[in-house]
Image (cartoon, rainbow, N blue to C red; front, top):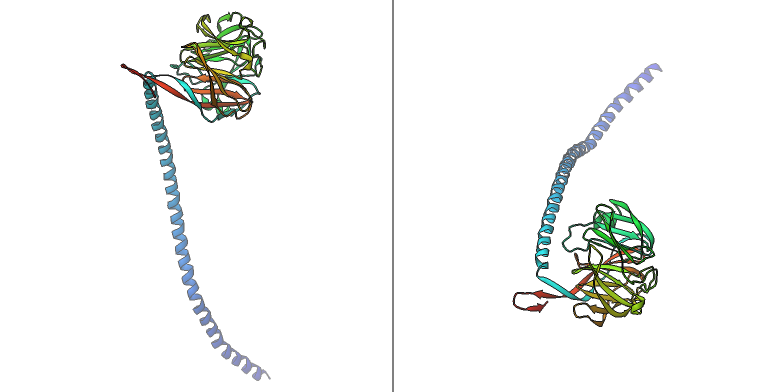
Amino acid sequence: YEIISLRFVMQLQSDLVPLHLSTNVSFVSQCRPLRALVGRLRTDVGQLEALKEEMQRLNDSLSVLQERFTLHHYQQLQQREFILQRHLHSCSSQLGCGLLTGISAPLTIRSSGSRFGSWMMDSLIDSTDNRVWVMDGYFKGRRLVEYQSLGDFATGQNFIVHHLPHPWAGTGHVVYNGSLYYNKHHSNVLVRYDLTSGGVLQQRPLAQAGFNNTFPYSWGGSSDIDLMADETGLWAVYSSIGRGGNMLLSRLHPDSLEVLRSWDTGFSKRSAGEAFLICGSLYVTNSHLAGAKVHFTFHTASASYEYTDIAFHNQYSHISMLDYNPRIRALYTWNNGHQVLYDITLLHFIRTRHANSTD
C-alpha cells in the first residue's frame, strides 16, 4: 500500500510540473503586453508632470506680464486723459455758449440717502477740485459729506463729514470756487461757507425773497431759494410777494453775495418743477414728476423768453434737485433717493476773428 501511494504521488508530481510550467508560460506571455502598457503609462505620466510644470511656469510668467501690462496701460490712459484735458481747455477758449437742444438718457451714479437731497461738484470752470459734496434732506440739515472723487462717491468710500454752523433749507445749494452757498433755515439769508477752513465767509439776506415754503417749486420742500452757477457766474432763483410769485433771477457777487442785476421771468415759481441755468439762460421744467420736460426758457442776454419742448427721462419720478455744472456740461439730479447725471446737447456759437457762426 505504501509503495502504491508513493508511486501515485510521484506520478502526480510528474503530471503537474508540465502543467505548472505551461501555466506560468501562458501567464507570462499574457503579462508582457501589460508590462509594455505600464511602461508607456509611466512615460506618459512623466511627460504630463513635465507639461504641468511647464504650464505653471508659463502661467506665472503671464501673470507677471499682465501686471506689467495693466500698469503700463493705466499709465498710458492717464497720459491720454491729461492730453485730452489740455485739448478740452484749449477748445473751451474758442467755444462760446450755446442753447440747449437735447438731454441724454439718465446715468445713475448711486442710490443713497433719503427721497430729497442735493449733490454737487465745484462749478467753477477753471477749478481742478474733483471732490463731491452731498447734503441729504431739505429741512434743518447740518451734515455735509465730502467724497474725494466721483468714483469714491459712487462706491460710498473715502469720505469725511463736516458739520455746518447753520442749518439749511431746501436743496438749492451750490459749490462754487471752493465755497458752499446755501439758504439758511427759516430765513432768506444766504450763507457762504469756506470748504477749506470750515468757516462762514459771508451771510446776507436776499432782499424780499420768500422763504419757508412761501414760493417753493411744485414739489415743496422749502425750495424757495435756488442757488446755481453757470459759465457766467453765481445766481439765485426765487420769488417775492411784490412780484406776484413770478420767478426772479438775480446774479450775485460771489464774495459779498450782493445782487448785481435781476430779471423778472414772468413765469410762476410754484408752477415750476425745477430750474437750471446754462450760459445765462434759465431753463424751467413743467413738473418734478414722471413726464417732465423743459417747458420754458428765459434768456438774460435779451431779457426775452420762449416756450420749449425738450423732453428728458425722469427715471425715478420725483426730482428734488436739478442743477447744471459748466465744468463737465452735465445736469445733476437727486431723484427719489438716486443720484443721476444727464449729458446735454448744446447748439454752440463759435467765436472767430472775422465772424460768428453756429456749429
